[in-house]
Length: 123
Ligand SMILES: [Zn+2]
Image (cartoon, rainbow, N blue to C red):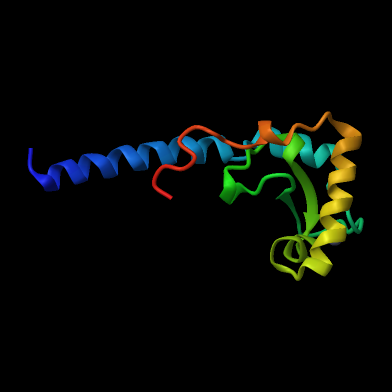
């Protein structure tokens, strides 16, 4: 086996493992509908009813955060942007509000919201 074909096989394995993780962190249409129904399709922070999308709260998708109801809330574009890209002083009250909100609905176990398998491979 040449070095090049070993490298190619390695790349194939890595991309397969990444696709498993991508699947686990995907938000299925069913979960999306459930979260939107739970939050009445409004921003859980400011109550705005337009430009709503789902935000990860406990574990971000880029850190293997699962696309499950316990990890997601509806946020408007403005609050979502502040949460993900804003200064900590703006993000903190939104994150804390969302954490309280989710704790009121579920028993929260943050460790169960992270996709663990193959987590550190290829990153
Ligand atoms: Zn909002």
